[in-house]
Length: 290
Image (cartoon, rainbow, N blue to C red; front, top):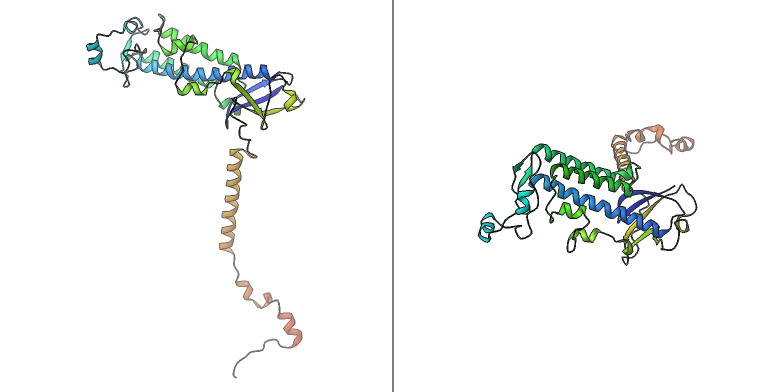
């Protein structure tokens, strides 16, 4: 099986396994699904952590308003009254006024945060170094455990405008957000190997050869962005090791220079011309008045 280290820019995203007979169309379909799925997991985890700290999201027309403004406008959070976390809630106001401040109790909060961390670990970039693959099944499992944890705390469900609910139902609106810039749609994706784009309609073996045990680095990006930067000859870690080695050698040479004793050069036996003067009979001649 071919191992592909999928990168976005210079950052490794995940390790992918396939065969040389895979078409580039199928490769892009699978890789973009995993890549976008990982982004979704991270977005849900961030919202779940906020949910654990400050409760459900306020209605859009109440977000950012002070209590006085809400009272003056006679606004009411009907869903907030229905969505009370299991085991009761604790008051923890949201400073930015996005959530209602009715957070789950300590036990439920800990469970939500622990689950969010577990989901992030399942699709972590660190899995590349550990030689562990991330698949669509891995992403789905992470989504499932997040959904299960939320259902335990909020068995009655979440408000229809709650970001966690919208993400789980694939109804999220990312337009105008930073997250929308990170998503790569399948029909707008391109994948590059060794500075060349792997074109749709061809197979993987047309670009990397026929060896099934190959391990390569491929870069995923949007169409029209041109060729991504080439991989450095040495990795960042190898470069650091080389710099540390040469610095150590330099310091050792400095110590040797400081400890070097040149006084022996003044000794008679170290004089290169001593034998020559001996044959010429001019040894031990002293100049000066007697």
